[in-house]
Length: 164
Image (tube, rainbow, N blue to C red; front, side, top):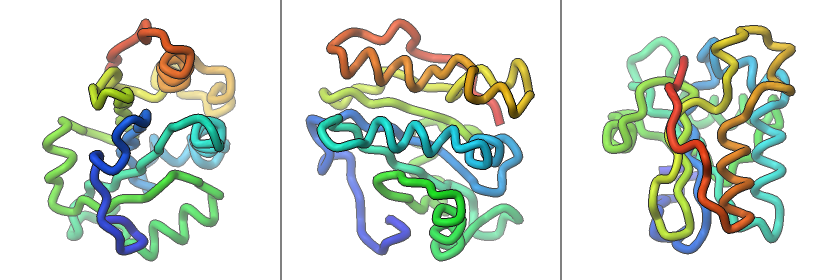
């Protein structure tokens, strides 16, 4: 279920590349990516018209967890940070997160046009540097995978260890 009240399924995005971003806007590992504009740059670049990329931000945080955000809070935070995912999804019982094996935030998945998961892991190598200023110059695994797919190539990196 999206923060907009609509139901979303991968089936409706068949034939498109789909990015699944497990997120929590209160997570200390997610915050730098949004405060520095890193995540928004990727969202804007890859969901631009003609790219055939869908970006779904998913919160699998339980409703009784201290970091849980209600849909209206997620929308407000996304607006404040100028985030532009295709949709923000709520998964408060963790059904979708469990199905994919999402363990932390940010945890990224990329699904190709055939519906196959071709990448799972970290968005970048930020964990190695832990310097927020490095975000713009870090090796961005998701960008590499999307660039390869959009060029009709097989991504070189298929998995990394997520952090968060």
